[in-house]
Length: 129
Image (cartoon, rainbow, N blue to C red; front, side, top):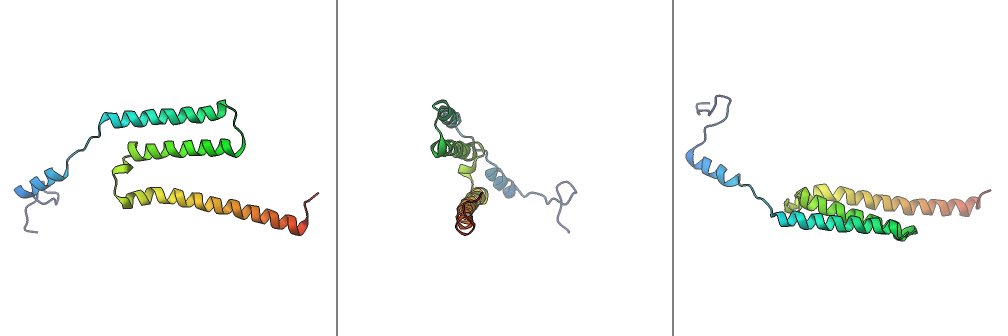
């Protein structure tokens, strides 16, 4: 407790070489504006493609597959660039990206299980009234 404090609130005084270390670690990195403009252009292109799926009147699994693909690509671009996930540590990316992927895997498993349950009910109880 004999150490001096900078402002009397328990913060230790900085030594001259500690200030240099803090100054080096607090550098601010800015990305070029071109990166954001390119991502914005890709988001515009993907949104246009998503709109064209409806405009051309595609139906069924093709329609929903294309819409989901365009949606996931747009979300990936937004998360990677605008939320700065492309420059994060790998552990942070796993913490953010892995849970939604696992949710999609579990939803796919539920879809297959629902089909199996329906086919089992039809086999044992008949097609219904």
